[in-house]
Length: 307
Image 1 (cartoon, rainbow, N blue to C red):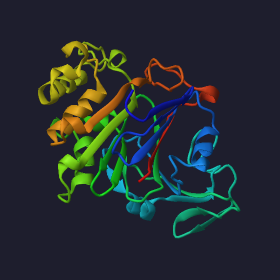
Image 2 (cartoon, rainbow, N blue to C red):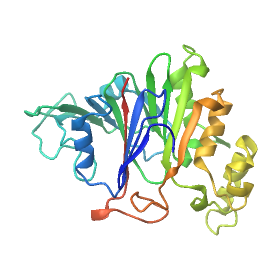
Image 3 (cartoon, one colour):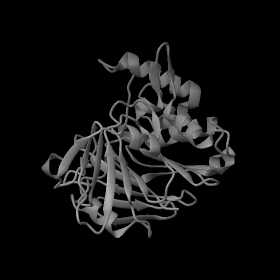
């Protein structure tokens, strides 16, 4: 278990990776709907959450946006007491009065002690956090969450590291996109790559994430993807280096991609063992076809900039 990791209760894991200037709260389907509001109200490692960015990550587009850009473009902006995430963990208040203006839906402020602004509706995979108390809320299944930090400037980026964002068929070839985009978002020539640290957590284990090349429907696609991964980032990204079975280790693939981007190996860590979404009964897994109470079909990952 990495430094600063705490399994609070069934379905709730809190990560405080060293040097990351962030905290990660992972809530599986075993957590209750009230857990996230309770955590936000209480504060995260002494940090009050004041803004949550809730991107739509289901296109696997590897796009990244700044918090400022998210605020400017978000079609939905809510201001509410933190009841701010409803029973399903969605970024909507349970009760709100709304008015329309400037093409956005804006909820009227309540008389809450703690008000949290929630921005949603932008189709991106990752968001850059510049202010203490800003957070990213991701809905995930088997895909890991990847968090990066520029330790010199205090900038954090949090993203949904799905397979199709990590390795995608673009035009005439397969390319890795999200990891290099996250490195670029932090680096921008303004800092040394030795100052960048990355941490990945909560995802399916390679034992259960197979991509057989003889699959009746997806065999041809799997063959091309598997060969690309093996050639570009090493065959040991597959369990037992078996490219034909293609049991993909997403955390190792992320590590290899970061290394090729110039991130020192000692600056890359993961929690590949504590939460395997497939085998953990308290977390949702699409491959395991396991849902939570009331059909809940996602895990909620909250990444908070704490310093």
